[in-house]
Length: 467
Image (cartoon, rainbow, N blue to C red; front, side, top):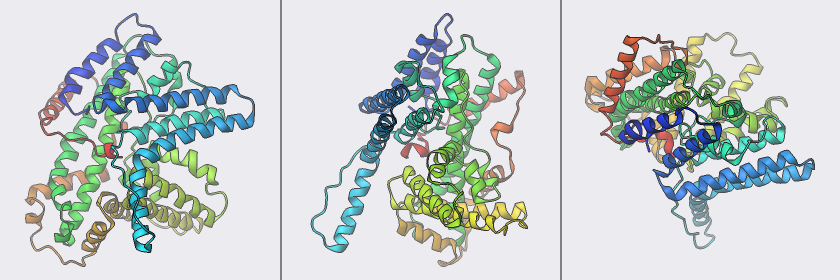
C-alpha cells in the first residue's frame, strides 16, 4: 500500500487514526491496533511475506530477552550471533543469492570452471533491508547495555512493524522510541497532530509534485544513454539527483508526519544534504539514520578513525562497500559504495593535513555536489557499461548537444530542473520551517493535499522500495 494512494489516504489512514485515538483504550489495545494495522498495511503488498516479518520479529525478541537474562559471556555472544545470522541470512537469501550466483557464473565462464549454478528468481520482500537493520540494532543495543528489552512480544512487534516507517525508513532504533512506546498518550495533542499533518502534506508534495514531475522529464533520457551528449547527459544526471532526493526525503517526511499523528517522534532523516561543504558532511545529512547506523554498528567497532590514515581509509572502504551492497544487489551499487569510500578516504587524508582549511564553503559545496552527482550515475544506471556511457557523455567525449530544448522537453524541463536545484541548494529543509496554525495555513495545506490527490491516478512507487 502506497502513501500516495486512494486506499491509504481515504480509507486506511482515517480508520486507523479514529480507532487509535478512541478514548479509554489502554496501552495493550493500542499496541494491538498498531500491530494489526501495520501487518495489514504490509500484507496489502504481498501477504506471503508477512510470516517473514513475523519470523524476524520473534527471533530478535527471543534473542534480546536471552541476552538480557544471561550473565554468561559466551551465551550472550551466542544469542547475538543467532540474531545476526537470522537477519543477515534472510537478507542474503532473498536479496543477494541471485546476485552471488550470477557473479560466480560470470567468473566461472571466464575461467572455464565448468557448468553454471542455477540463478534463483526470488521476489525481494519490500522493506526487508530496513526492518532487519532495526531488529539487529535492538539486540546489539541490549548486548551493549544501551537499551532495555521490550516489555512484551506485542510491544516489540508494534515497534518493528510500525507502518509509517516499515517500508523505507527512517531506521528507528528501539532505544530512540522505547520510552514513547511505554507511555503512549491517551489523548490526541492537536498541536502535534497539526505538525504531523504539515510534515505529511509537504512530504507528499515533495514526492508527487516535485519528484514525479522531474522524473517524467528525465526518465526518458536514461532509457538510451548512448544517444546523450554533454548537456543532455548532465540534465539527466541532475534530474535524477533531484528526483531521488525529493522522492526519498518525501517518504521520510511523510513517515515522520504519520508518526506524529500517532503520537510518536521519529528521528530526522535528511538535513539539506546537497548544501554540504564536504563529503563527510554530506553523509551526516543524507539518509541520516542509515549513516549513523553504519557509523555506530560498523565503522566505530572496526576502529573508526583512531588508528591512523591507512586503517581509517580501510574502515571507510569496508563501511561504504557494505553500504553500497545494502542498497542493492548489483555491481553498480558496489562501485557506488566504493566510490564514496574513496571520496571519504581522500577527505579524511586532506583533513589530517589541514589542506581544506583555506577552502571557502561555496567552493566546497559545489565540489561536493558535483562529486555526488557523478556517484548517482552509478547508482541509477542498470549496468556498469551504461554508467560508463553516461559518464563519458558528461565528460564531453560524445559531443555537445546542438538543441538542448528538444532533448529535454523544451523550456519546461529546463525550468523545472532549475527550480528544483534552487530548492535543494538554497532553501531550508522542513525541520527548520515553522508554520503558524490558523485558518489560512489549514486552507493552504488542504489545497496542496487536494492537488496531490488529483495526481494519484498515476501509480508512482517510491524509489527506495526497490532497496
